[in-house]
Image 1 (cartoon, rainbow, N blue to C red):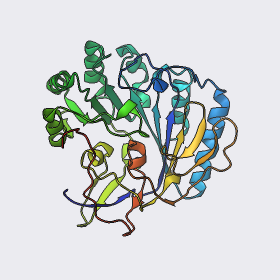
Image 2 (cartoon, helix red, strand yellow):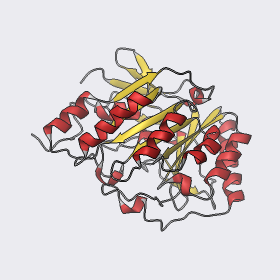
Image 3 (cartoon, rainbow, N blue to C red):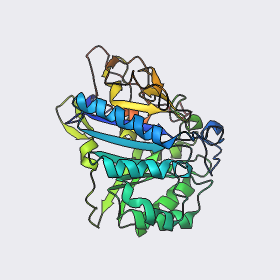
Image 4 (cartoon, helix red, strand yellow):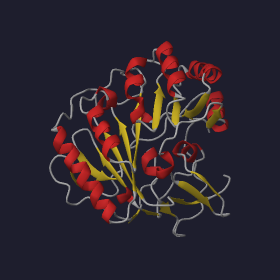
Length: 337
């Protein structure tokens, strides 16, 4: 099992706003819930009102002692949302204490990224082997890996095309001067409310157990602001390391039932605009980004969810209370006994 995780913490409190801006995607992967790409929630509300309410929420947290903010945009495919770039531009120009990150399939042409990459501190580039244009993904990755602090090549390990995923990612390592490879097991319907995919091939299971994150840097990173919004792990032996959600999941350390969790440090906005504290819903719904934001604010709860599967929830500050029993539980990534 390795070291037992006892706390996820941030040196200074920061608010993470995780916004699933739409459910439209130009991909329609077989392992993804159609609710993530059907496009029936365009979320095309009033831009000025979005900005007004975001500003009000951030000012409220600043008064509560929060110095920094992290905006993480997902979808669907967030770059297809008509309000995406205008909102990112507003954040970039008006919030020097904020970082911006986006989870994208990297299908936009290079000229689009060359125009807009300055906005982003971090980019999570999900590699969907069924739909990806490999040449475009490669071209964008080579260019972006020197322009942002953190370009994650998030390899979604498709069971039927498992080794094709691995082969392409291994190739990318030979052409990218900087890389951050996340070997990522699927979960059912790509939904954090379901559970992990159960791989049937023992070679796949072995690969997942032996591979997690690979990092290499040969070119200096740009002067980005990401260090303002980083969480850390603290273990029972007192050691610490930077928190990475994929690492916690693969090592089966994402069981936080009984822990105290600062759910109010993460606001999740779904494609129809409903806001909750943490995407898991443990903090409850607290309003709507276009209508009612008066109940949004810092909050701590005792978590009763068995397993935490959402990356943005995993990195929320939380600590073990001593009320849980040391667990030998393991994510069931295999059908094999």
